Length: 312
Image 1 (cartoon, rainbow, N blue to C red):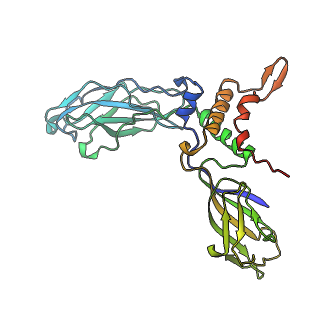
Image 2: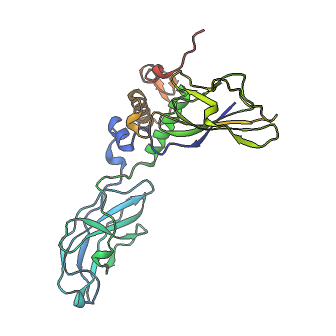
Image 3: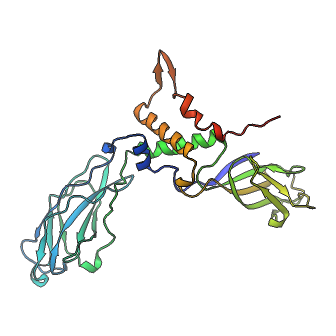
């Protein structure tokens, strides 16, 4: 029997912001938002596309992990007649830290208060830009939350989630798995990952080696029992399969739900504790000259309720 993941979860049980808050990790791990840009009418004056009226600017930093919240707003610059001078010179555009890969510039429409995407500077070195863009060509709004992070924190969350899943045999966030067998058993199939939301398909190679899909009326899912079971429907026998390895494939959707809020709180606390420990103590812990990977007693005990114990 083989278990393999087909579609991994699209989110984690904790956001990085939640992990940082729960683990009391300083926001110093994030890229700070930029300071203000200097903006003036272009000199020498030239016709342009910036609409008549007052405009303000701001910037954000972009890293491999995300984008900062909107930076400090500039002073206003007013275009009186764009047919005479319709371009704005931006200078002193802030440069970010070593993780910054690009910067985004945002601007208000004339007399507006919403900051919309003006341009992306695809480096962390240039400090000037000439704005010659009409209001109608501005893009999405500036972000309100900082999603740049120490790249290790997201990795720590994913690693902790995978360890928790491995320890308890449970998928936390909705994901798709396949359980592969060499043949149908005599009776029921024990499904070795929990909790099961639904069976996507049961397929098998028939005696001629042709892949077949078993009708959904040919089997019954028992997801209330832990672990779950897949049984032939009443009066149905499993079909005979090709005499080869991996002849039966059960594809199923598993997990507590599609968001972190659906995951039991014990898992979420355990992941937060693992992240806090890994962030503060990346190496082994030395307690009384005894090297230990992690303080187990209380923290790992959070997962005890989710272990399956078979009673003889």
